[in-house]
Image (cartoon, helix red, strand yellow):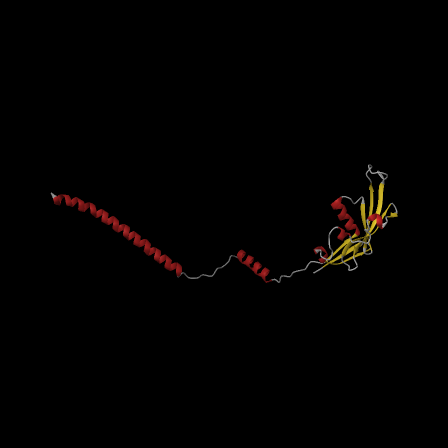
Length: 204
């Protein structure tokens, strides 16, 4: 009886062993293939890279561009504006070009004003204001300045006392700007005004 029972058990174990053996052989085969593949990859021959015609042309253009000498052109440090250009810029930014006009004289700027006064003002209300002023634009050291030289209204030169002694004073100082310490002033080497032209030379 016991022999008859053991026989079917032995028959059932044989397929299991065969299956395990096949699995083991499969794993070993994969490991062998992997080892062979890694060995070939590490020892593969080095082949030169050959570009297509279009790729080669693009590369040559890049090489030529890199080999060309790069030159740097420094910008100008001279600003030149004409009287017409200054008035055009002033009108574009303020829309007051029909009331105020600037004239460039020798080392000075003349401002002319022609505008209608508010009708609510006493005595002069509703009248047209006609005035002109002369400003010197550099001080004795040729540094940038705005110095009131004269103010004339309706043909009458206004006394300095009526202007709080502003004539001959640098108005930049009145505005709290020290021309000797201002970064704007330090960046300007010279300012020159001739009839109809403004020339500013900037510092290095």
